[in-house]
Length: 68
Image (tube, rainbow, N blue to C red):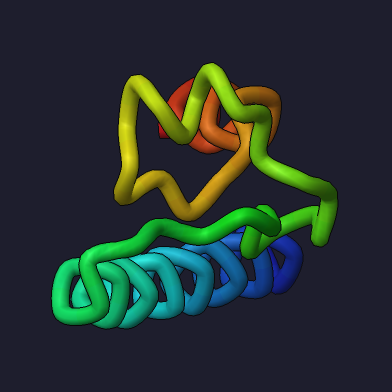
């Protein structure tokens, strides 16, 4: 594993941890996020309606899932 791989793994782990915290907070507050935790862009209304606890916009979520 190269240094870049370690950095990428750490970055993904941090994002997942942040997403987990955000998901727990949104469940407790009964409202989702309006801003993506990765790119700071708005999460589309249709995504928030389909998944009220979404923490990422659809593009960032697809990118995350593709990286797995």
